Image (cartoon, rainbow, N blue to C red; front, side, top):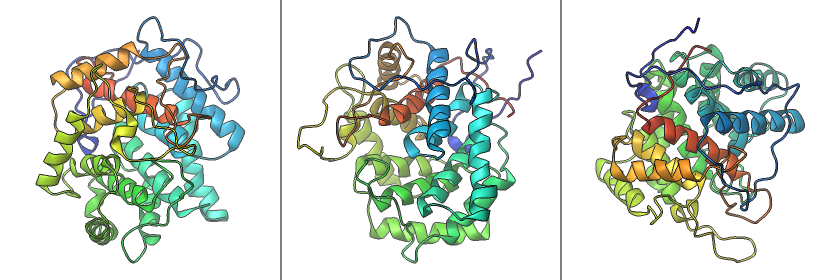
Length: 356
């Protein structure tokens, strides 16, 4: 018998509608023992014959577990993004349990024994665990609280964080991304975490940082729009309205969005950025707009969802060109995560969140 737990995910803006559907799972669950890394992210991978949430989940499971097994680390574009997206399909998947445990071990074991590798690791882990909590139990797990509390201890006097700046936008290229991600983390954390003394002090400094350092890209503004949708205003009402209008205006003729339109990033070789709609641009934009209050049945969002369902690749992923250079295109992993989140946020029949 399937045991369901109905949750209103107010902290991350996703409301579960009245349709109860069976959770999606692969025929043979992907585990750390049997995982095979998915093939390369290629722009010429054929489209799938039909949209498949099951294939998307299997791709996410495989990409995340393979990264964990081979590299023994977390990264924003793969296994952190996975913890945001996988509960939107089924939180009970064995792969999800494994990745969640890997993140918890960072907090409980790695940081206790050796300390974090980077300050960015703390912010990214806190955000992923907080969102994951909101999407599953809607309770703040003790280790999530520990990660969030540690995040504030690493906050600089100017309100920002020292970030990994290795030239891989939009995630690993500037300090401002870290500030935006911290805003999302504290905004989505369940049980009103943002009202704790540590969070209130940190939020005040964070808002001062944002005031002194406006978002350098529309992508980062959209992250603050996402965070502000929960009731903790990191943007003014006028800024939020302008951000929504700008995001909507960037929809392409085919119904999708393109990640390069959310910033002014330059490619290493000087070539122009791709003009094609992509998984990250479309999924991220639709998801953020849903959090900002745009209805699921909005014509623009529905066209975007239609684009996503028509442009899933055979492997289950959605391709996105790297903003830096033509090599691994790992941003496709995050693009697939946001595509799943966008579809689930807009579909009338949404899979119910389940206990972990």
